[in-house]
Length: 308
Image (cartoon, rainbow, N blue to C red):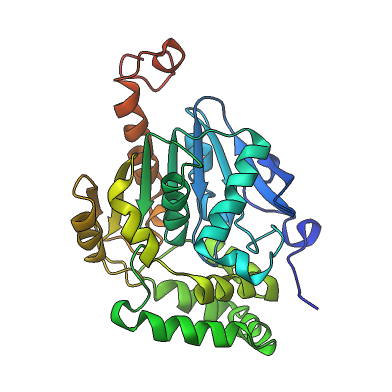
């Protein structure tokens, strides 16, 4: 039996709980946080994270935009789908169904790590049409680069062994282990953040979703399609990121020269958790940039406009 996080127990003091709701879409029961009023901003967390990853950003963004932040399939408090739907196209299709059910049309999407890949797949497939996609330490290159095929096969083998998620959940539920895993990303986050990750890591469904994503992830089609991306792409790169080498951003820009790189000095893979205000400022600046060229009165009158 797969052990899942329980909302009444594990979510009892979940960050921004007052903004949480549960929505059914694509055959899954999703945990989604919605806050604020204004143009829609979609936030997509990375592998093995959940909505808590945006815990400090959401209250800062809500006065300016309507924030929509789901737990991705199998993560946090969202149902675990069949393994094949943990692929990049499968994940994007599931998120698209959720957005349709909620009638969400994001003008800006921010994705962290693998969440950035999901955001780009959504845009490339025409499922969303944002003005821009902001990738915080986007995992947009194959894991292990030249050795990607080996890592994918290894992950698929591990994900297929029933005891592996249980074993990994048991190991990672130890707070010291969770803290070490997070520190290995090059980031130093708050004790509260570590506790929330450790809380999720103890559940096999959450770990199984992370393993399943690794096993089914294929970024080559995404990279091949990237040159036809319509929205602007901003690559926010933590210079101390040990999970996604900062040099990968240059390789992404080589495929899409219009992409812009923003360096987050001294920050690691969880840069948006280390310095949430810096991440928020970057997102609001992007909204202001395309708001300045908009002719829509409803947008130009927003409280964050250049003249406001």
